Image (cartoon, rainbow, N blue to C red):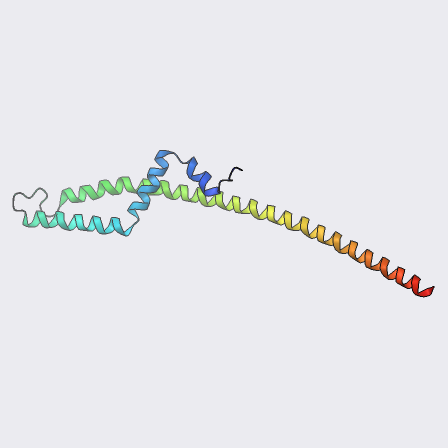
Length: 140
C-alpha cells in the first residue's frame, strides 16, 4: 500500500536547489551559532589588526571589515527575503490544505449525523411497533 505524502513532504520535494539554498542560508544566518562565530571572527580580526605583529592589513577604522559586512548584508537581505516570501507561500498553502481537510471532516460528520438520525428514526419506529403490538395483545 502506497503511503500518502504529507503536505510538508510534497512541498519540500517541490523546492528547487536555489530555494533550498536560500532557506538554509536564512536558517543559518538567523541562528545564535552564526552570531557567535561572526562575533569571534570580528574580535580576532580587530585584535590582529590592533596588535598586528607582522602587518596591519586592515588598520583602524577597519574599512575592509566594514566592506565585508556591507557585502554580506547586500547578499543576505535578498536571500532572507526570498526565504520569508517562501514561508508566506508555505503558510498560505498549509492554510488551504487545513481548510480542505476541515471541509472534508465536516462533510463526513454531516454524513454520520444523517446516518445516526436514520438509525434513531428506525429504532423509534420499531419501539412504536412493539408498543402497538403489546397494546393489541393486552386488548385480546
